[in-house]
Amino acid sequence: MDNNLQDYSHKRYNILTGEWVLVSPHRAKRPWQGQNETISNEQRPAHDPSCYLCARNTRINGEINPDYKDVFIFTNDFAALQTTSPIFSVNDGLFKAESEQGICKVICFSPDHSKSLADMEVEDINKVVEAWQKEYILLGSNEMINYVQIFENKGAVMGCSNPHPHGQIWSQSTLPNEVEKKDQHQKSYYDKNKRSLLGDYLKQELEVNERIIYQNDDFVVLAPFWAVWPFETMIVPKKAYTNITELSASESLAFAEAISKITKAYDALFQTSFPYSSGIHQAPTNGENNDHWHWHMSFYPPLLRSATVKKFMVGYEMFGSPQRDITAEQAVDRLKALVK
Ligand SMILES: [Zn+2]
Image (cartoon, rainbow, N blue to C red; front, side):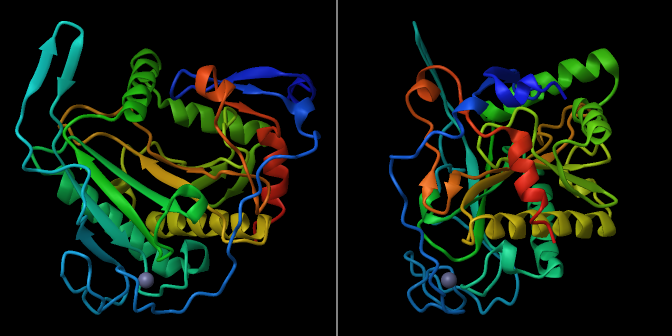
């Protein structure tokens, strides 16, 4: 790798979105005088009577959660998208709008209120993976649904209101912005080369071996060359599958293992339950040919240099491009040492 990338400001290209990130490695040593976050490392009980996600508790709409033993899924009581919205569009001069229908679900990863994915056994994470697969099929087969977004918002720093281990699945009639960009870039590469864009990228990453954090037979965990967040990572299947339902049983387990490895390394990094937003980008369920898709899972963690210093996307990031100081390679060196 060109040494200039570790010493001088430059911008890196995101092949999936067509966007650039500004990297300023020379700034990484400047002193921090900004805001410190308060991170709670308190031990939580296995069952919290006031938590609306714990088993047997009553949710705000009056429904009682079942006495679930592993994964529990329900339709979001305050969904951002609804199936009952009328279909309409607005085309009034320069005012343009379209109706959007969808279904939003909440998925509890475990009945144990005190755990996170990082604390769970690989077999139990695999139950979450299997539930994601079922929901992708179930929601995706709905005529109205053309895209299924699986994600997790973890930690108060990320605005997550409930510490119970859970994620969300928002499914909708159109492709959201990030997915639309990735769809287009993967499609144009595939049409031209007849190969997966991420497959070729993965090949190059494995050859140079500078940003690989962990790999097993079926998956690679790496910091993408174009990573924006200080400790951003991506889990990529070695085979160019378009969606998570194409995994065999043993590949699902290998995916769960990869999730376990990276989330454990994250928690070890600053000795804290590491906050992040993670999400899976995969082929739309629009009934079209989506052979150009190579699904992947991304982790966007906000912490910068300790459990209490958060990276803010403000100022230049809002008005120009995302910017980072520590390089992806420096982040990889630290995470790699923590993979057990
Ligand atoms: Zn709970």
